[in-house]
Length: 456
Image (cartoon, rainbow, N blue to C red):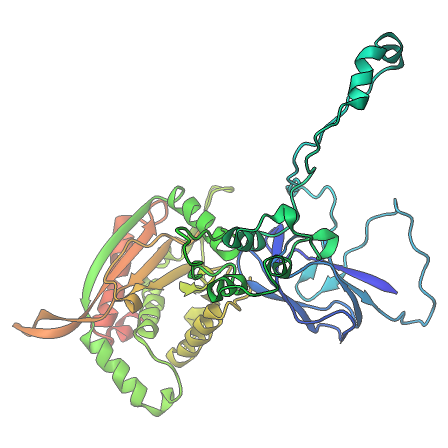
């Protein structure tokens, strides 16, 4: 029995995903829940598990193709559990296929679901108006030239390809109209373009572009003055979210420079202790813990503005977001219930979260549900900034670089380690007093870690 697997809705109403790679090929035998493909949504790269156990009979989409939710992407030959022969094929006008359950969601049915449907971009083809019988009888002379005059034809639709393939063709000076597509339904693939220009004898820079079409640091082809990268996936979603946040929430940013010498000394002692052996401890670990403690005294910053219901939603838990720069763009995965974690567990969670994000493996669940965020601009040598709020959150804290600077210490000027904290908050939710008290509490904890006992 042949069964099709349709691209499921991978969460939060996403309407399309890009096939990054197939983990299986035609003829392979797969088991239930075996990973068969990697796809990139607007939020993350997601592994697709197989909803069936059987043999792969067809892969309907090539890597690099953007596929709409509900479109078939792979077919399986599965054995009927009862051993009965396959059921008769349904007529063409039969009811749409039912949803097939799998680990990541349900395959959506393509019909009137309320989601916008992208229209296929086509060029207008020549249209010959129907001629009534009466016109043929009375105006034969006018009709005769139309039948004998050669009509200039033009393609009804531009060659089917994906943005990365079109980019590669442009870089190599290839007109896609001259390339025959070998992919499904005549889709032009990268190999088709390479074969057209000589069977793969491309400059190494061009190979780099083809290998990573979405990479922001792709090497330009020699002689090229511009490099254009399609805006899609995580980068497209992040851009839309940041624009929405900047023009929806009234941002206020406050700054505080702190003598963090005691915190850095504590960090050095913890690294030498047995309890933290094998754990990655960084200034971010201490800043994250300070934020979690300060939120207990200033819970108003752990909230969101619900525009639809005209309500302020106060969270009694903390899902701590950590901004991470990845090859696919900025992501903000979060640690669920971070306020319940001890320092050693928090350090482990931070290491796992950042490593997963930089590898592009953060799940949609990791990237949703955050309540407050931290961005570590200090790793780039930056002292301060005005971070933009992650949508749905009331505040974000930017931690700057730790630098040695002369400071007043015990009535003398001494060389101390200092850090600048930048706090942006939504002024609809947080007034100046609340924001200032929270920032001062975070600073006090870093200047004197012993304050944690007073604030706990």
